[in-house]
Image (cartoon, rainbow, N blue to C red; front, side, top):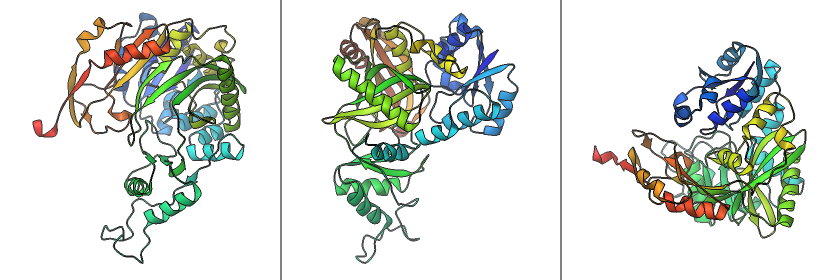
Length: 435
């Protein structure tokens, strides 16, 4: 018997293969680029290696994926743990008669603007969203001008800015309704920033469409949850340290955050209502939120286990392979983790820091990796890039070259240790003019 995975997150493949093997199944990974999993494949345990098959296929070609899945012997389930492939994965599961989410609910969750509007209508958010009426660029003609020198001309960006000011107000956030890795996100606090963001957005390709929503002030967290048929369990809360504006990249995280019991109970209730309202009733969810002075406000819902090293953090803190719940869900059965007694504070807490270069160019390596063992917390290095890769994007997660993870008794101490260790690691980047 076999469980297939339509791509996967960069980290966690080994634990997923072990979970499948433990359930008596093989894991078949469909991937368009197995190099994405180079670190995981290099560190597979013998048990995971014995349970894993890899099929190289264009995973953006749904027909090719359907043919590849049809050739998998005794296929029983399809794991769909990414945002990019969540909609085609749901469609494929439905076509093949495999357990899986309602494709319509997956499409809703992939549209951040629709989710924001729905929550606002149901009283779960203080602000709604509006689609930004702007074309592929800000010019109205063939000369490349935005018409700003003509007092009688109203450019598309000017029209959009006026509507955002009227409907949303400032501060606001402009973002891609189906974006990932914090790309195509613009926080704007004044009209100058608003016009600049709209002009830049007009030149960008989008996975979805551009929309605007209110900017909510406060620290950012994510609720890591598991659901089955509308019943949701909060597995813990992850802290998230964001970069200074205007960049919006994630810098560091730690798990599990020690909230007082009353506040944790309120978060459990809130995230359960949010997921039910958004139509997510089964499987993992990674629910990012801002904790404002008036309570939590949603950032976005990802119907998957958290990215980066969130899955690893969950496994360590809960003392179990949480990917077994992913296998259970793919097989259409209630996850045992939903009913298992656990204390998220009993296992080691973890903190991890994303390591970015300070300039664009070609990555040639890192300095400081050989000194990590001198730091407390047993720091570990998880590379996300290889020497020779071009670094083009510095303002979102695409620029991350690796992650340093450290352990401690609490998330706070683990984060301190991870920050200390990561401070010794420096990506070495050769600028274009260095040959």
